[in-house]
Length: 417
Image (cartoon, rainbow, N blue to C red; front, side):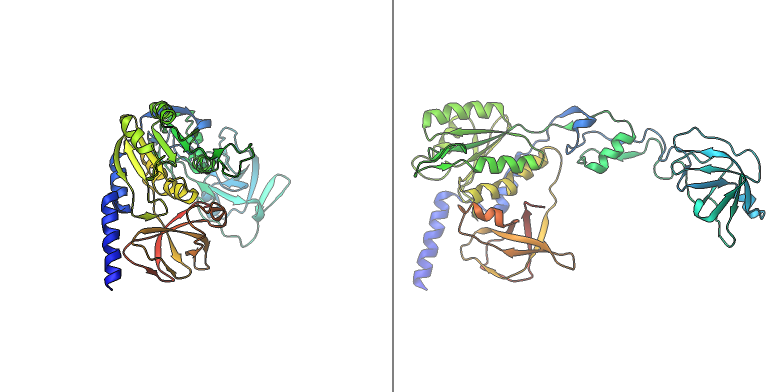
């Protein structure tokens, strides 16, 4: 017990020296730095995935006329009530044609789905229940007809002037349909941050090069860029070697040209980890450095007049966790979107000893009850890039406990859904 207590005290002293903070504290600090982006006008063709910065209203009633819902004949319901079951065909009205008027009692008009219901007609009988011969449509015996059947009344969905989409709504395929319907050729959306992804390190070479035994190909930046692109965010990639002067010169330019800078590597306590020092010299104010989490403990975050810097560890899993857990929520909030938490249930028990928030790699599937299930796939540490391919996401296991039972529910960061 004395030995355990001794090492426990050492851990506390070490954490205090590093000024480590907790994941909830990180969330609060980052959230405080978020500023809603300005707006810009984009064309309808370029608005998919963007976030609305204006209300979209109906420019006319939905539907704009009494709309025929089935192919068939249009009649007066009063004729049916009077006992008529055969109707002289006055003509035919396709969708897209101007409205016509049903001239006389006892007559009908053939109508197609989407057409304007004829004036003085109010009821549609489907072709399946009628027989047309020698210009007369006869309803089959025993068929039940109700007033206004198969007619979609004008304005029954929305009235002219009703708000259809509110600011802060992300534009998906459904919203595109509404925008097209009301003729929004241009619309206001929130601007997106200019994002830079920066890799540091002498050991990195291009993917087209054959690495020396002491080198590796760049992968983190492409991993991060691809994931951002899949979420709708464009980014610029940079690589800076471990040279203090070159780091300072290039980071100065990158910080000036971007609102969000994501660094991968150079933020630990190594002798060549110059990033925190250089960022401070460039006017980036440190908000925290080192977080009680795994992977991704040496995580540095700072703010400057133009935006923020997420300086993440260089290990692949650490960078990918940081992007999903912190960078993407920040980007969403700059456009007025509040990320909705996703939860998953552990499909198997798991144990983790250090007093840290642990982002456990998992495979994900839905069971027959519709519950998202997470099966642990811990891999071989934060440098296990290949394990990202086998896994589907991360489950966030809170600090303060060691054992996590099968069936318990935790926050989930899926990256394949």
